[in-house]
Length: 116
Image 1 (cartoon, one colour):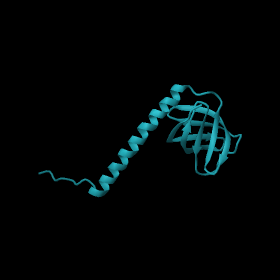
Image 2 (cartoon, rainbow, N blue to C red):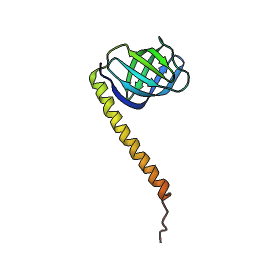
Image 3 (cartoon, rainbow, N blue to C red):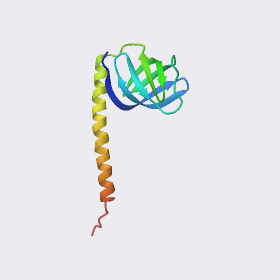
């Protein structure tokens, strides 16, 4: 199955609770995730949550700050495509935000004008 590279924020819900993560890549059958903190062990069940999608799966490998998920059910291709579009828009949004923050840093905060 082909994988799409995403690098967008997501969440994983484990027995221990919900944790923020970065969804590195995705296919119809699985995903690779990067997460800080306590890593799930192979065999752990979880739910990957992103943009209204809840994908149930099992951790199949875990190394350093990354782990792989195999989904219980194959994701519909349109869900994978929609997440790719979301990732593209997310990257553009983050770049615009960084430019705006840099511009504001250089120019300083907006000045108030007196009304007479």
